[in-house]
Image (tube, rainbow, N blue to C red; front, side):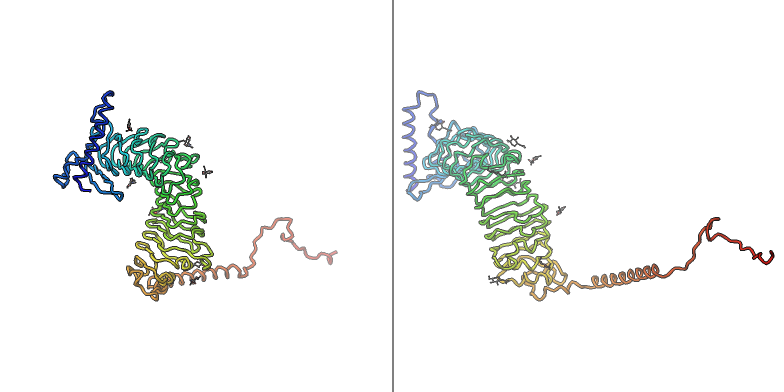
Length: 483
Ligand SMILES: *[C@@H]1O[C@H](CO)[C@@H](O)[C@H](O)[C@H]1NC(C)=O
Ligand SMILES: *[C@@H]1O[C@H](CO)[C@@H](O)[C@H](O)[C@H]1NC(C)=O
Ligand SMILES: *[C@@H]1O[C@H](CO)[C@@H](O)[C@H](O)[C@H]1NC(C)=O
Ligand SMILES: *[C@@H]1O[C@H](CO)[C@@H](O)[C@H](O)[C@H]1NC(C)=O
Ligand SMILES: *[C@@H]1O[C@H](CO)[C@@H](O)[C@H](O)[C@H]1NC(C)=O
Ligand SMILES: *[C@@H]1O[C@H](CO)[C@@H](O)[C@H](O)[C@H]1NC(C)=O
Ligand SMILES: *[C@@H]1O[C@H](CO)[C@@H](O)[C@H](O)[C@H]1NC(C)=O
Ligand SMILES: *[C@@H]1O[C@H](CO)[C@@H](O)[C@H](O)[C@H]1NC(C)=O
């Protein structure tokens, strides 16, 4: 269908509606302009001048034919400086409008839209403070709603009424501190919910941390984004359909039961000190684990990643204090080569690891990419196994020993991974000094021991009392002969 035909089609539609309206409306005193004529698009203009002029009063409206042959209108009003005074009453969207972008404007109030074909609505980056009850009830086929980066503080129970086809809602970057019960319970199709960058820490407190119970989301929900929400706790155990959970940059220190279907888990930037054994128990479908920028994470302990048979991507980038990965981090049976791991990508960029124990080679059998950029790795004999792994692409350089400094890990030959290389002269001198010190200490020790066991001269000084048997005795000369 060409544009001219379409124009007639659209104008015809508008006139029909207007005619109907004139029959019905005059009784009420709703002005005619409130209804029907969309002033978002100037459908005449593209015919005369197909190039868009920026800064005119109209949005950019594109008309395409859909797969079914019906015209589809996409309206882009992004950055058009629209304010609340732009809308008069409610806005009848042109027929066939499927997409409306009102982002980056100056709206403080959600406009009342009427469009039975609208599927995508973007109200992001405005100054909206509330979503009034039932405001979306005339755009009930909406599938994606973006209200991110506004100033919403409360989400009321009836705010989303009528959005029974909604699949995705983005509420990130608001000031939401409270969500009334069942706010999402009408959105039976909801698959993707983003609440990132809101202050929900006190809302989801320790006693009331069950997300599904509190929001009324169904377990159809597959993607949950709750990064930077100041959370200390969240209970997702009812989320049997949850596949991706982005929970980074919260104050979570441990996780209560996670749903078993989870395939992607992001816990970046959380204050977890170490991953203890079975930290993520039996997530049989987990494929990606993101632990970026963990401020105080220093160790992945024994069995920390046990029971994750599908784990193929582990990202620890920027976790600067991470210095230990236990040789049995995937469990003993991996080390004994009894079970396989699927690990394909391991990102250690910017961690503080100096070496990796050769027991890990069994876990790394399928590894294809290892990123060690900015990691102080010591390329000595203990790491030779890593260089010898087949099919592995390594990004990064050796930091020690000095002879291999700044050499790309992948270009150093396995035989160059030597431990003797460590013994440059300072090291030797230090060892000699240590040996001398040791000899001196031993000599002193022996001297002291010898001194201690040598027999001592028997010089005994005692004070002698008058009654003592040792007291001075005067031996009188024998007088018998004198008698
Ligand atoms: C929806 O449309 C009806 C008329 O069809 C109107 O009375 C009502 O106010 C509209 N609601 C919104 C939220 O625009
Ligand atoms: C959240 O906030 C951070 C920083 O404040 C910003 O970089 C990020 O883009 C925001 N994300 C969303 C989804 O609003
Ligand atoms: C948790 O939140 C609920 C409702 O928001 C509140 O009633 C309760 O007192 C809070 N509990 C704590 C320990 O903060
Ligand atoms: C996070 O929550 C704590 C209390 O639980 C509060 O003191 C702090 O100000 C909150 N931080 C932000 C950024 O909201
Ligand atoms: C998580 O929520 C479920 C369902 O409400 C509940 O049975 C379970 O006890 C909760 N777990 C924790 C650790 O609070
Ligand atoms: C983590 O590393 C930073 C420097 O990167 C340091 O200031 C901080 O004290 C370390 N934290 C712990 C718990 O070691
Ligand atoms: C581990 O076992 C597999 C077969 O199960 C074998 O192909 C592989 O070479 C073994 N790995 C090592 C390092 O022995
Ligand atoms: C590697 O780990 C094994 C098992 O814990 C241990 O016996 C061995 O000494 C470690 N190797 C190095 C070089 O630390």
